[in-house]
Length: 406
Image 1: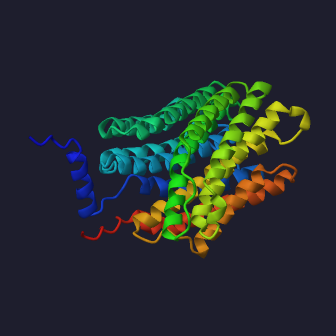
Image 2: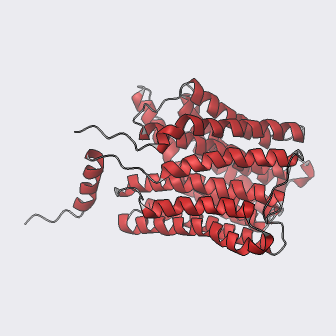
Image 3: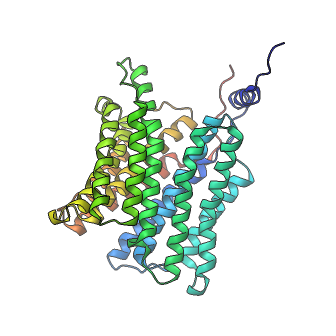
């Protein structure tokens, strides 16, 4: 008797998704909203720094700036992308309908509430904002359980830490603290860096090998499981130590060790060979900011007597550099594939990527005039994300074209 095919339901869903009408996915509205907010929030912050306007709402200006990029913009893009890859990995249809609409509405409500809530309404605004990440975690956990995919389960821990960090950030702000320069901000940064380490470590070498094969180039060596595991776990431990004690020499030494392993991992992917395709090369540059951040932040903690790099500059290697570049490059890939277009960078896309990479370099580079570096970097960030919304907004707002019949 022939044994039952336990993968039959999953394979049937895959065939239905491939042959049937294309459905709107969970990533598209979050990508578009997140990019518009990235440009808007940075514009508001730049104007506030220049004294042209005040930032309303219950959060202090610096707290609002850090929160809206770390716990506002970044989660929208990360959750959107995770919903896309979770659907690909599990073979299930993307999160759609009411759950997707509720996610987007909660995210938008959180942004509005933290700008418009009066001081007496801070608790309600905080609850609305915190609900987005909590719901996202529940949805992705559901997909991990139903899809029985361990790769999805690995993403739940850093996503849960990000949700926890957001709750701590809002709680500390409600109690008169300064979370932007304290533990809640470091927790969020650590969670984002760990997610980039996990997701980037799977996708960047995969996309690179695919490009090498498509262009007839010899493939890069396959990633070594031992090196990858060591880099991920060392990074997680170092980030935990840094979040708890950011100026302790031991934390700095652990960050430097993690930076070394991350660099060895990154070099094995041979990203310099992809310079002819800016969309692939940008992924390598974006991930390259991850080990750079470990080294820069580690130097500041392990050797404070050097006086370089400054703490704020070093951290921006992770935020403006790794987060900004990697997220933009991945969103461009998703938008092109969703529209059934060639995943290649034209002049507009290359300029967009160059602007965000330049912003990351300027903001994380010490020794430059602060106002000059912040102004130019913010301008590059705004231009890159506003251009993405203008260029890909119509594609993301419309249902994706149907797949051709087999």
